[in-house]
Amino acid sequence: MRRPVSPVLVVIAHGSRDPRHAATVHALVRQVRARRPGLRVETGFLDFNIPSVQGVLESLAAEGVRDVVALPLLLTRAFHAKADIPAVLREAPSRLRIRQADVLGPSPLLTAALERRLYEAGLSPADKSSTGVVLASAGSTDPEAIAVIAEIAREWRHTGWCAVRPAFASASLPRTEDAVRELRAAGCDRVAVAPYVLAPGFLPDRIARGAADADVLADVLGPAPEVAQVLLERYDAARTPVLTALGA
Image (cartoon, rainbow, N blue to C red):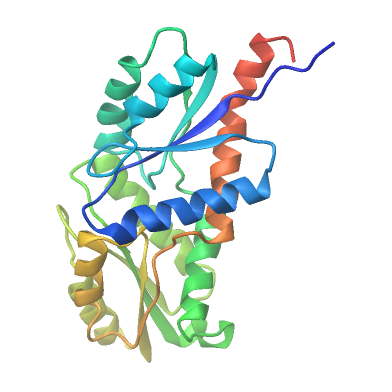
């Protein structure tokens, strides 16, 4: 009996006028493809960049594709995951069977990726107990998203850092520079800023400016292997009902 074809993974990114954003998204998608060569992975953008999500879905339907897993390239469940993306998917061609995967965070793999970036920026595991970390995210008006960031900071603190404080580039407080000052006042020997963002752009640049008085500024998560693995985990969790329905 012929095995059913795996659903196409459509990675949905926000998009940005900053060309570094799309370049980073594409680099991450290449990581995903390399980890699972038999999986078809497409990328669509909500705004600013091409191809659009709608264009990707229409193209897949025209090819005869039936099953799609739409994966939001987002770290928290905020407005884009709850409203924008479902609205776009509702406009997809009716012949497509689409399942929306969960957002990427929170995940222990993402925390591991944050530490990877901090070590790449010059820290070592031996520095943890004397280093305070600012977990700097883009920010949101969604209370659920803000609570998730605060919880990640609390849990990460227990892995050995001197202290971990959440900060936000927009919509919420404190700002990165305020959290840096707070960690200095708390007595941490050094302060590091870990951007909890996937790709460069306007808000990550604001985080970087706020880190001017920090000792270490890590890079964005970008195409870290841990992030690619989370994408595949979210895809697998979403595709299982599809394959079950097909008798797999």
